[in-house]
Length: 128
Image 1 (cartoon, rainbow, N blue to C red):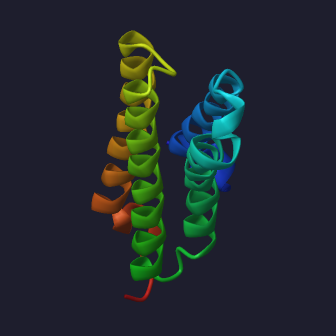
Image 2: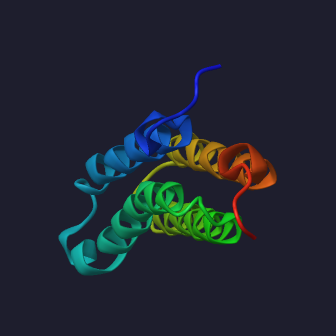
């Protein structure tokens, strides 16, 4: 396995970026009155995941900081799932679409958890 040289090579980054783009497309269908509430919240949370992964990558010299940033990304992924629950509750999406999106964000979270568990693989001899 070749060494990863950029955060852009991380599968979890690519998936989070892809899924956040899907969230933007999905929320274009939401009611206008949700523009500054649900729509902006779910978009911000979903976009923050890939940004925090990139920030974690830049700070991997210190394993604790790397883990902290990945944990923040995990929190944003979970927040995205909560906003998806709101979208389902208010009938902006149906159960099948909710399940599809929720599964994708659950997968992002699982990938982040695996990275956290394997911190030494990413940080090597970083200071703790």
